[in-house]
Image 1 (cartoon, one colour):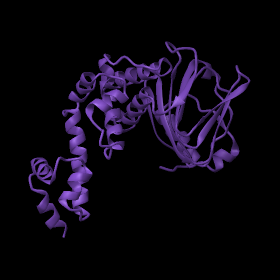
Image 2 (image 1 turned 120 degrees about the horizontal axis):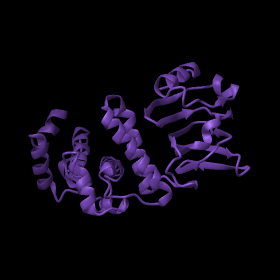
Image 3 (image 1 turned 90 degrees about the vertical axis):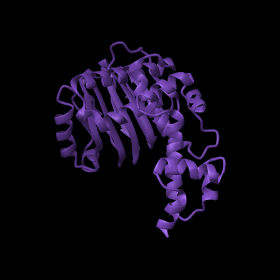
Image 4 (image 1 turned 30 degrees about the vertical axis):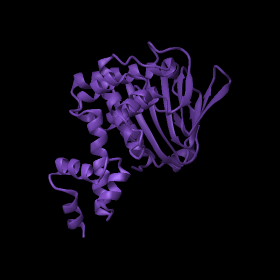
Length: 292
């Protein structure tokens, strides 16, 4: 949601606090500010988002940046970060991530950049920075967990906040390693959420199966199934239910039962009708008649 710069600063102070000071922004950034999405703080970890901002430029960074790790996950636009140790820059573009360890001198975003950001203490992190595709399993899990925290963090108990914080730190540590501990139970909710997001992107893919999702995240099928057990459904049931929701929309749009069964990979129209009735309590034919 767009906001003025003063509103953003006030929001930052309320949610994040003055022990995480903001950088100094260029005057053009302040006057053209359209704001960041809601912020979240879990103890010493910060999650924030920028959506469609006109362009952000800093002129000075807080002195304590050397003790921080920052992760940029960029969906659109891009960021350029100057690191005084390298006397050079890091650039991260749409579809890429940058995990930066250590001091930052200034950063600049392209107009209309949309990105997710995580910042945390550098303690326990590898000293090297990393960058690559946002499609890696580790980044998918970090993004899924961080975005979930945006939605649920105000309602978490102190123990829940700590567990969510620890899971996010562990996932971020996995980024430069190129792999995460799939036996760590704290990571199960993030794995389930990331798999749901990927399934949503691949619903029209005939090859979408629980096994395919497990391969995409580099985990065993059993590990993925255990992660979903905490959500109250199985991987296969989740995929089927999401396709049924799409099928119900198609019925409302006037497509035939035969067309829908083929589009969403049911064996035939009879199979689709049985599964649909079991899910919604009435046959697809009644949904068609109601939409007419």
